[in-house]
Image (cartoon, rainbow, N blue to C red):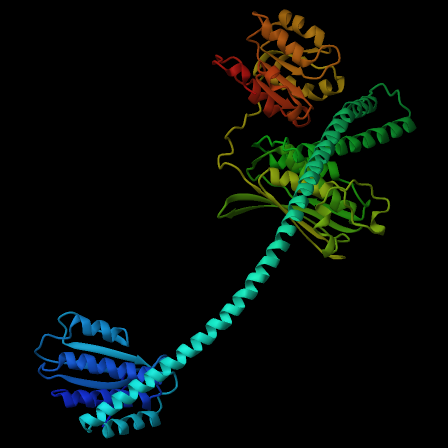
Length: 593
């Protein structure tokens, strides 16, 4: 009787092997069990042959027996376990022969040998198991002649199947040969077409390369045009703004009320034009990779207060409430760039909000990438359609619609703000919808925890006794005068390059602040004259200019201590450049660009 183990194994029969006759019974039993359980004919013969060969090799061992069972699972198997007591065990040749037919497991010195034949999934049913048991009972007897006949029948069947397989293989080879001829012909045709296509691709690539070269040249020409035009516009616009302010600051009351109103309009328009010129110049610098941030500790409370005062009353009069948060969060970044980012975002929000609120919130965000300061500008304005939210970051692009009437702009605000944000190592994200307002989030790295690295403090007392400043632009000299008053106890102003060397020789200052572009004698010539004079050679010189960094002749500026950008000049930069002028200068420090 068969029994079912806890693991799903069903025992079929155990056959003792003591004589040759028992081997015949083993062969028939293995084949019959495999047939009943749905194994293919070839698998039946393989199992029967392997059992016969291994049993014959073990014949004579004490207690030799074979247990047949079937195991359920994802892949059911017919299992034969050969066990014996004393004896040499199976030989290597028999094991190798059996392993080529079925799966055989045997460990050295072990007196157990396991054979498994995989069965078709689903074929192991209660009916098939009962049929296997019945067949095993029928094949437990039998004569040698019957077994020989069975083996002959199996051999004939195997030969017939082999012949059929050879015939099928011959047919398949003929089909494959015919297919190969077609493939060769197709390959030849495709090769010719591919070669022709490659010639076209090569020609197209050459054309694209030429077009790319032309586009690069056009982009560089555009950048140079922006930079040159912006630079040339800045000087007269600065003069207009400066002169307008001087007229408005006239304490004598020389202007009538109408004249004062008109001059105020000139001043406001000039300031707007100057801001646009600055944006154009900065966009040009950013595109050419020449716009570099100057990191310093930022007084965030002062920056936010300045924005609040500057933008107060901007936009729809009395209809929009502007709220700018107050914050003392520590932040190390470029203060000028930060101010321009926030001013652009706030002015843009105010421009397109007719009623409601525009707010700027500031928060700290500690994440896996370090501490950040997050600025969020929110408005209740008209909003931006989803399909245009990427295009608004293209330069000069403006959302079309009636909301544009009466609102001037260049379409540079948002792309300019995003470009500056990325230069500062941060990110700018916009979310909006028509009629639901707009939210812009600027996330900037807070910088070193101490906030002191590389930052020059604002002096409470001058760091220089005497400073000579050489610049032909009276407006710039007026604008920078308050900062220089904090930097030096005495400031001597020179308006012509030709007088610079003689003034320095007379005054013997601690340092010189030198403009690079002057009509009579430019800064290059003044710098060369100071460097060539043995008595003036050691006088520290800092150059200031509005020219793009890429246009400067660095070899001719080797004697300068530093070169600073006029548009972003701060007292902190001047202190950093001049703060150690009384310290001994080391070799090579003269070329400290």
